[in-house]
Each structure stands twice: as C-alpha cells, then as structure tokens.
Length: 346
Image 1 (cartoon, helix red, strand yellow):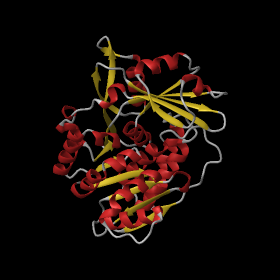
Image 2 (cartoon, helix red, strand yellow):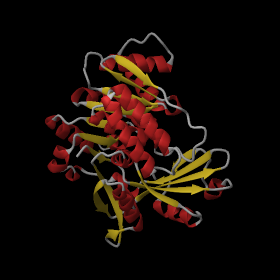
Image 3 (cartoon, one colour):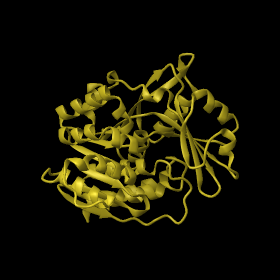
Image 4 (cartoon, one colour):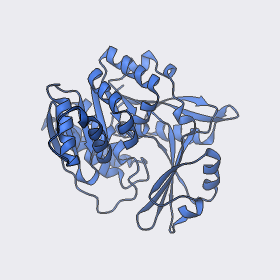
C-alpha cells in the first residue's frame, strides 16, 4: 500500500443556488458553522438537487492519490441507524471505493458526519458541518497489519485533538520508519498544537501540509523560540521553517499550499517555489488543498523531485476546481497520472 489515510469520514453535500438561500437557513455567507445533526437534516429537506461526495481531508487526499494510480486505504468512523449503516455511510463508502480506496470504517451509534456546502451568486459560499461519528476514531482501529503495509501514513490535522490517537500513530510509524504526512487542517490547530507539531517534526519522518493562513499561524507560534529580524509574516514563515529544517536531510519537509499562487516547500534549510496557472473560472474549491496533498504524495513516493512533485500537485489541484468537492474527473486524472513516467525520465 502506498498511502494509508486516517481522519474524519465526512459526506460532503453540495448545493448550487441561484439566490442567497443560506440566510433562510440561519447561515451566513462566507462563513462555516457547526450544527446539530437534526438541524442539518432540517436544512437538507429544503436543498434542491444535492450532490453527494465523500469528503474529509485525509479521505479526499487518498482518493486523489488513488485516481492518480496509487494504492490507498482509509481508516475512519461512520454512523448507523438501527445498528445498520445509515444512508450517509453507504454514500460515503460507495464513492470512496469507486476510486479504488480500500475502506476500513468502524460503525458508531451516531449519524455519519456531513458537511453541507452552499454556493450562491457573487462567489458566496456557506458551510454547515455536523461531524457526528467522524470524530470517534480510537487507537484500536490502528492495526499492525495496516500500518506496516503503508509506505506513508497521511493524518488529518483534526486528529491532533485526540492526543492518545495521535501519539499512537506517531509511535507506530517511528518504530517502523514509516513517514507521516500531516495536513494541519485549520489555523486553530496550528495555534493550539504548535508544540505537538514541532515534536512530531523531531520524532518522525514528517511531511507537513499547510495553507497560507495556517503557515503564518504556526510560524507565529514557533517564532518565539528563535530570533526573527522581520515582522513580515511571509518572511517570518520562511525564516522559521528554514531554521526548523536546516541540516535535517529529506525530513521534515514542510509544504505551503498557496492556491492560485502555487506552492512552496522547505527542506534541509532551503525553500523552493512552484508556480501554477490560475484558473479563469472554477466551480468549487472545496478539497483542492487535499487533492494537492494526495497528488504530491503520489509523485513524491514515485520518486519525482521535490520541485517536480509540487508542480504535479499544482496541476492536480487545478483539475479539481472544475468539480464539486472531490468528484474527480477520472479521464483527466488518468491522463495526468501518465505524465509521471515522462517526468521521471526527464
């Protein structure tokens, strides 16, 4: 197995509306809110033509990697209804498995986690999330067989809130010299768990993924441990992560996903950048960063250079923008996967 993903199993539900319907649901434009499962059920009754796609950071990433030819698996928790999988669990598993991802889903006596994304005119977007069973991952789900088989273990940053589980993943991977890829997932995680993140970078062979805001947030938290000669947040991040990776070889590798500005990465004290071509128009950007992470790992594990892996990941993220969530265009991703061989020979 190339990549084992561990994280929140969320069913993403997309709604594309011609008016600002979010306000009628008590939701605010360009805002994300947590809602109770029953409240989300009520909102969904009013949603027209919903599109269902398996979601969650780690799930999205391994799906993208699988679409690009990697062998992948996913560990998570879904919900039940009268002790049987609820309808949302069936939809989540069916979509993920359709991309070739091997699913290891434990049933919980809660609704399956769901995330409603409402797109409205004027590039407005509202999100209502009900995590449900997704957050009930536990250490017993980490079997020796699954961990040992993986070349890399990809962890959703939300797992950082579960210290016992996170520590167990770190211990099992360190004992077997299996790299961990961690997607920070939010600025809140970056701030609250900066010390734990730094410890992970020291203990494990780690690939760290962050978006621009998370990069700045984590750098601000870690900057107090070193002398920085700039107040510019971008330059400060460069100074902090160059320092943390200096003299360390291939790991840690710290990657900033920058959307239309491409990506940059720090390894062994050096920073490299990879540009991308901004999309003129796109349908939905949900999960673009996750697709970037999955594509990067696919290329990196294949043997592509760091710069080449960043460029490949940028291309995959760009392709994703034309679909709701990670309902990936299989033909386009298959074509992109075929370019890996050419890149490796060049």
